[in-house]
Length: 339
Image (tube, rainbow, N blue to C red; front, side, top):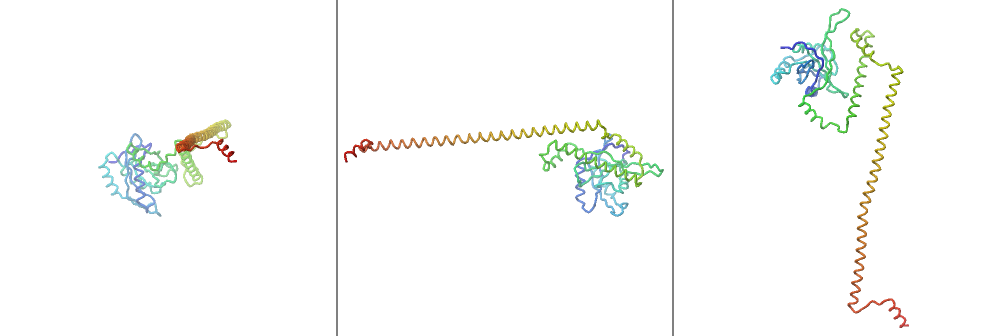
């Protein structure tokens, strides 16, 4: 029994879904993108996408209106998944984009037969930049101002990554070998800010492209979008205002002063460590030199005592043989008698 139409404020994608999609994409090399079905549940306006399975899909590269989706396989796989976990319902579908295609509306109408509030999640299997590799969309009716019939189009829905405790443990085991332990919290925070600026720049490029196409007459005027852009532009600060320039310069100077003081402190600490290391090495050299000098002194004293002992032993031996060593005076007197 299909679920009723529900309002979706946010989509939470689990790591298991990302791993399944990447595995599906790597197994099928001859296609530009792959398609599958998402399983999950609604929780107070939040769509929790906890599982997925692949579906055979093919399309013509030249004609986007020609495509094939295996309904029988979809129903068979969903029946088996339902036996394992009856709480997981069909909540939408995915493809590996990396952007929207012209036939996505037609595919979404097929999935709506199983889920009226079908959600499309585009998962980039080969992201070129760091960041969230998924984007969520829902199909809405677009009303035209010229009186033409309404048409269905996709509206972006906020999405994020979420995991249960068991999934978090598994992800930690997978990332243990590739995690860079040298990266600290400051580097991670700067990386996050850089990614945010890149995302903001990309969105501004989309806005610029949209306005240029509307001005050139390639796209119809959507007053809702124009009003929202006007509200965004009204929130921008006046960079030419004197007070704003002064406050910006003061804040920048304060930050540069903090950076300068931090550099000086690091230099002083490095110099202190160098001096401490030199003093420590000198003390170690002195401690190693004292035992060597003591050993040499003891060795010299031992040799001196040994030579004196040998001399005493020799004198004792001469006396025992009846011979006495003549002194210098005896030698002189003996020499005078001979003369």
